[in-house]
Every structure is written in C-alpha cells, then in structure tokens.
Image (cartoon, rainbow, N blue to C red; front, side, top):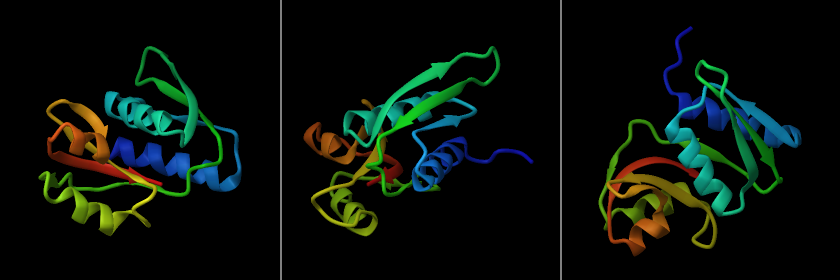
Length: 130
C-alpha cells in the first residue's frame, strides 16, 4: 500500500497515541513539513519535545506527549487562504476563538494563523490542532 499523505499519517498516529494515554509515539517516515508542523505544536505547548532519528532511510521522529492535544488533522487539498479568509477558516475548523490553531504554509515559512495575520501574509492551509 502506497502512502498518500505522510503528514496525515503522522497526525493520525499522534492523536491515536494521545487518546490511548501514551507518553510517547514513534512517527515514520519523517519529512520537513512534519518537523515544521510539530515545531509549531511544540511552541504552542500542545506536545512536548521531539527528537529526529536518522536511520539512513526515510527517518523517524519520537514525540513526547503531554496530554493537551484534543484533535489534529490535515486539510487536503491544500486550499489557498487569503488574509481575509483566515477568520472564516478558523471559525469552521476550530471549536472556539480562544484556543486552537490553523497551520499555514506561507512564502515566509510554516506558521500558525495568528502569526500569519501578524506578518500580514496568506498562504496554503496545511492542517489544524486544538
């Protein structure tokens, strides 16, 4: 079976381990997009540290969970999101305005929707977490 979306597989295994109450989870294969997505989640405090294991193949990531993650997912296809549409997407995907983040890939890197609004840039939507 061929992998269609590596980021989707990674986030699914993350949320499954979180629901089972595990403390850590192994994600494979690794990619730059997964690492950036996990970095955004770590900066916001939804996961703990993660370490990248380089087996001279696709690579693995060990993520330490802290029990704050309720749901995360991928939006496929990666829709274009202008600066005006960010609020509409946030109200559709997130449970409340107080918490949760949409992850966008912009010309200035992968970031959450609040940082994109501060930098006044749009982009393509990758996924969400809360």
